[in-house]
Image 1 (cartoon, rainbow, N blue to C red):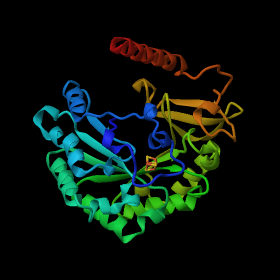
Image 2: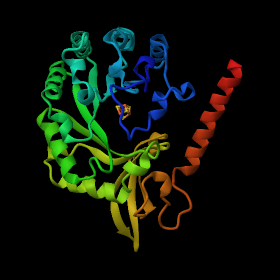
Image 3: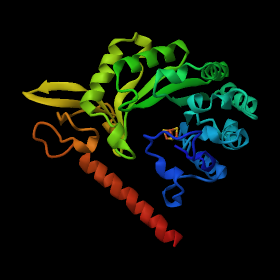
Image 4: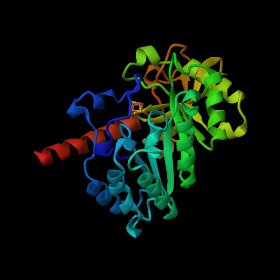
Length: 315
Ligand code: SF4
């Protein structure tokens, strides 16, 4: 995952966003990497890395020439191990002209084409909250233009109260995406940061909305995973609510985990109608800890020790 320094803002700001810190001028909270060279050096020496995710803010606020500085060198033979390049963006909603009539839109389209022709899987990870964002002629023209390069558009977005906490909204959004050639990818739970009090939806309700939306769409639109929490130990999905051995529980699983061995292992939490995030949940069946808890604590400690070492070396 890479945060280019020129892509740390967005075309507009979502009020529910947890990345607010980046936008209010507190440099201590910024998480930018400033050098393309640093990225390339790292990737050159880590041929086990196959996927690169460009994120922000929104990397599409960058001029094409900056984006090109990061991406074009990856087409050289010494980066053949980088097979997938993902770019997270909300520009398809906020500023579709980025791909149409903006000064360097044609250069951007040609860059995407070159990456695809060089054999990279290029995916725009497009943030959508509502089917209305897919309705404007500019949004549709931008989608067509990107798809014509061979790049794939995958859609993801959070469930947010007062905006899209309705199964019909998600069902229509996923169906519209499929009809436009976009792959529904993630149904996220609103994060436990930022302005969550207004926007959060309890996990039990989130699962209900997801389930009812899935029931209304055909198989091609059922590719969105969720409800998924991007929590510190990993991406945790609420698979459902069940009664097991007389106890009502949430069935959970890791879609991604700090330890790959956790992935796809089901685990169980006591049902809690009010819980909105992983840290509100307690293990079911009288267990004191999650199966991953000790290992996660050890991994965190090891990471902090490495960070401390880095600080003292720098000092
Ligand atoms: S576009 Fe993404 S990063 Fe930017 S404000 Fe919205 S949610 Fe946050």
